[in-house]
Image (cartoon, rainbow, N blue to C red):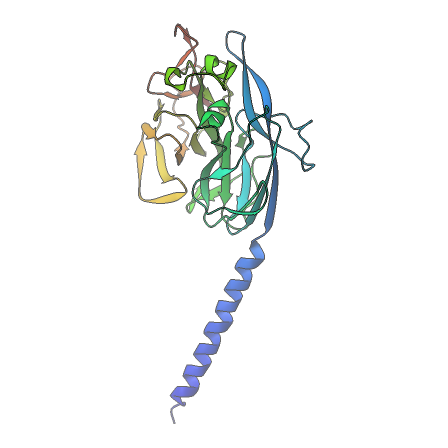
Length: 321
């Protein structure tokens, strides 16, 4: 005798609800509430040639509102969350009088639960850029920007110090052995010296930065041969930037937090202003093309320091096996 088909259907429906409930419970269990306290304040950077440049930057502070010890950084700190986390960002203002800092983020819908408080759900993993673009873009030009890394649910944080990490993980389902956030930007010292009165029609960047430094002050990326190095590009500058890697190829996996349907290999890749890109380099076991390693540099030839552009440097960094 065959089992009653209606009884079978009821059992299947019950199983579906049980499995669905488990899945939903599991996803919520992995999600968390994450809070960042950011202070927008002033700072000073020393560029090659002993050029001192004032800037505005974000600092991550432990005590809410503590803008005394929270001196701004260039770029701002790398913020980290897991996919599904509810993220709250409190912004405290220590900019010069007449300027109010905000928090803007591409890729996620922001809500404002309170004054100077921003909240969003990290709905997908990837690399994103945050900024304060007040004063008609002058705040971002002064340095109020940084990177947000959203990891797959349950993955451990990786950036204990600096912008690079030896922690393994995955991006868009692709495993990596270590990773590095590269925030690309530029500085016009004349603008930075007088941001309130400078005519932006005359803006002319003369220093090109990777993580707030111009070569030879950039920090090399250590990555042993054979390892998969994830490069998280964040273009916080005003120009399209073409980053070229000599002696190796990188596999471009995603842009602006979206996985590419057709990842591809490239030696040079254009990253638009305000955009992000995730690419993995398998470090070759063959000899590097230079004694310093594999050069990664701005193919637009923004590899000089100062004006007139006579000193080599700029947006250049090396991957060292």
